[in-house]
Length: 261
Image (cartoon, rainbow, N blue to C red):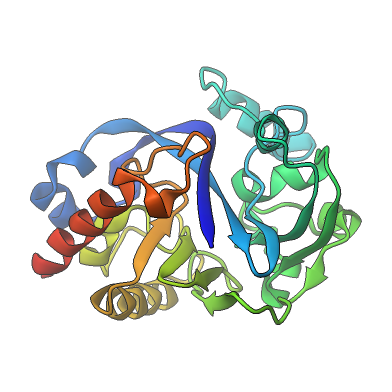
């Protein structure tokens, strides 16, 4: 199995919306304003080529109407690059699976503008009826046009990991000793923040339970990769599992586990 990391953009944000006051005081890197990455992961292995999330789309960042205007304003000073030209630059001309963790525009928008064929696109059943109260969600009428299969296929190497809270059907994925956790964690520091702000959680109690579940996986030595962790860097075509970044990420995760409140 090989794992590759791509960045499709940077999101300017006040981290007080992501971490509790206690966590911001304990981990100085979580304080203040910053740009967080918007990461997409490619797994190449027994199941073929599987992309986890589709990232931003420059051409259609979050759909039309209010959502499109809001995102255009939010990211007006932000550079972003679609996943598709990045894949094609590495001579990847097709995908076997595209697994979507949840229906927010920074994870789903790229589906609309895909430039290479994808055999199957999947997302959690609960998230195929997103709440219109959450402006981050794609409108249901647009999701229906994306040819998304509800639920996830049975594959040899990648297994779905239910992590509700950020959205009702938010789903991570486990492949080998790696867990791709989407927005269940803002970064690995979130393992030490079981009571995060409610800003980006549709069900804060469910999200807290998901964080506890991920703590247990981390204690078993599973490396957790979240979609917006600033400590993750694009692999530039190098397999994460054979790069120095892999051991550095594991070491950082172990340090956070040692400091758990």
